[in-house]
Length: 124
Image (cartoon, rainbow, N blue to C red; front, side, top):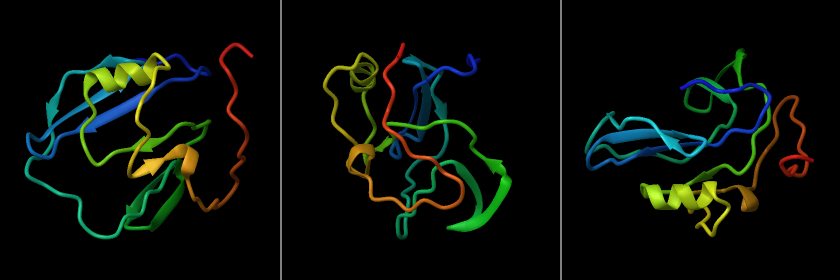
């Protein structure tokens, strides 16, 4: 999947723990589904780190492995979204915000050089 630089993109990844199938959607277009791992559950306390690869749980950060760019509308669910739900989000139709992570209700801690600002509308 190739992407144009310096424009907003939408990325959605899904994983069904029962079947083990995962899929990535880029700007509303699905990739092929691939087997990742089945009958697995994510265990332990939840720590979500955005924009930084980590080498150990909650740490091992390397400045050369950090995300550089802008990020908005991050959501996470504890179930697999249907293609219809993903398309509704892409079409700015009604969608159910994440029940694990909801960007608009996010309680976060900023670490390092991070700028937060209101979302810009496309074309402005």
